[in-house]
Image (cartoon, rainbow, N blue to C red; front, side, top):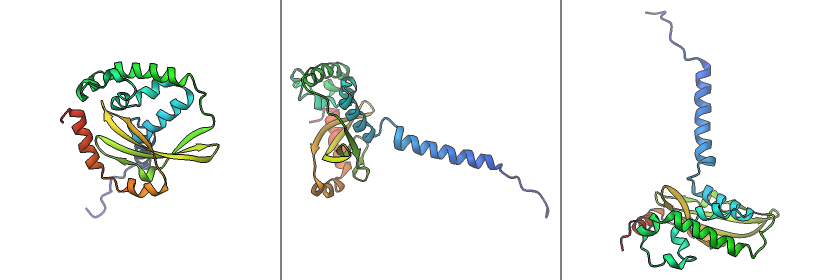
Length: 186
């Protein structure tokens, strides 16, 4: 009993565990398409390259009602069930409008991760527009989760003074409001 050998775990097992944990973290932080930051990035990348199908797929049906008056009288449940149809109509309208303008050049966005707030049904993402590596403005996007994916509900310009207010946003209140909106309760 004094000299019984201990079973040792091979070193490569520890290496595999560390690699798996790093991969899971990397997926959740950078590749997960359900992350609100990823939705905003995908939206603007698509917009800057003229991929209006992707632009439309990243917008909320509640946002789309502003551009598509034929859906204005529908309740939230109807809007959500007609998502595919609304997305297609949104694509057509955005394509027509944007065909009249030149796509912006050398513009990108930079997500300000410390200001991202994510709840169960909603999120807030703050980002800067960068033009040739110089800041060209700042916005906040409010996102709503529709059919399991965050989609842009609204976008609004913000400034440095607004950042403290964004930091103070109670995401659980926003979640409650968006849950009520999606369930059609009035």
